[in-house]
Every structure is written in C-alpha cells, then in structure tokens.
Length: 141
Image (cartoon, rainbow, N blue to C red):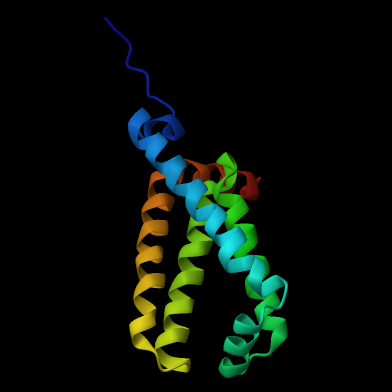
C-alpha cells in the first residue's frame, strides 16, 4: 500500500521554469519602468507630472504619494516575497490611473495603456499567488 502525500500549496501554484523566467523578465522591466519613468518624475516634482496633478485638483501631496506608491510597487515587483502583493497594488493603481484619465482629465483614449498594465499586473499576481498566500499567512499570525 502506498501513501499519498499532498504537496505544499505554495509549490503547487508555482509556474514552470520557462514561465518563471518570462515573469521575472516582465517584472524587472515593469519594475524599472515604474521606478524610473513613472514614480521618480513624481517624486522630483517634474513639471508635466505637477501639471497633471494640478488639473486633477488633488495637489502636490497626491503626486508625491502616487510617486511613492509607484516606486514601492516597482521595487516590490523585483523582490520574490513581495512580487504578488506588489502586482496587486500596481493593478489597483493602474485601474485608478485609467479612471482618472477617462473621467477627471477627460482623456478616455489615454486610459488604454494603464488598463493594459492592469491586466498584465493581474496576470503576474495570479502567477505569483503563492507569495500573496505566504504574506497573508504571516499577517494572520
């Protein structure tokens, strides 16, 4: 008689080697994009970013807050334990950015790019769901 042993949930949900490499490549590229091209200009108060946030009406505090969120999300994408939660956070951030473009800035055509990013981040979060489960288990302790 053979005993059936259950594999741990975390290893059962991990992607294969090729998919894992693809995910890491995508995570690094998107992480660097959010750190350098999206978050950093907001943190240094670049004129274009400041003007966009002034049009929204939330002021500079919200520009800096958004910059911190984007930089933290970009860094989180490149840290194994944080990659899933970071992808969830960036997915939410990009959906809100799309809504801002469409409704507050009256430029619905510009909302397509953030929505595409939201779908990509959703896929990354799904593939990295083991990191989300591990983090939520730690929080519950």
